[in-house]
Image (cartoon, rainbow, N blue to C red; front, side, top):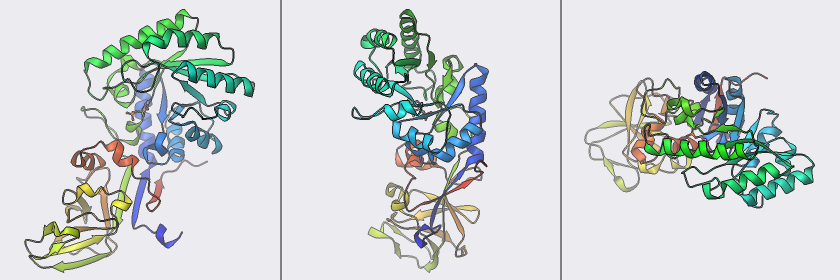
Length: 376
Ligand SMILES: *Cc1c(COP(=O)(O)O)cnc(C)c1O
């Protein structure tokens, strides 16, 4: 371990929490007869795709979902054999390795269907595809107007095995939003059209929010992402355990006098004599600079404000009359169970969502440590 790999800034991933969350979600899905696909795109939302995938499979997920084919192939290369779906690539991607490795491929258009079928005939093996219907998110997926042609072409294509039809919800995190039922109606209609051309596919629609709030939309498979990491996307209380803790350590403590200002731009000035602690984590490690003077850390069993600007490599914490030990642990965000800061709190203050906070925590300089790795 090089010096720079020291624990100046460290993300700790609790895989026990991942297993716990997946067990809870897979249990809800199983109540409706659905299987669970753990979504591990973007390096497992910043938690590490491979260890998360192993923990999720251990916790009862039977499928994995990735954005790109490359993400799926990385998991295959690491020995993960579970069914896997990848859903968003560029037009120049070569699907052949995915077909050879048994990775299911999402198809949103006739053009994409053609490219997958061509790759499959070259490989000499049918590609497993999930036809994606745009039911109202207007992002990826086949527009309803083009859907009859897509299902017809898919049914006629010998080198395609249509495993599923699927779609994605726009507003599932706002339970009761009128768009949810509207999308569900279009999904039912899209399924009927697929049946009409002789297909008998699985169906999947639910992200984390719908997995938690809409058992009627579980169909054959649910696709939770954020909730497996312990972050709750819906307003109602859920028993989820945040898996990521971001921590650092006290490297310097000093007494400053009333009237002294701290950090670049002197945006904070001590109103009394106080002890400040230097913590070697900054925006180069994932602390948003926009949280300057608007965040606190957990230190010595209490919350202390970060004062002055967040710098590239460091922040300054106001400890009042306390004198923390050099090397004392500083929690920047974590489970929040003891009253400490959370990724959600960062997101709320910074004007974003906790998805972006944790996904942005993959930094070369930040050490990632795993608790509870699956023994293999
Ligand atoms: C990211 C993603 C999910 C998971 O969404 P969460 O809100 O994190 O549960 C499910 N399906 C698709 C298509 C996605 O892109």
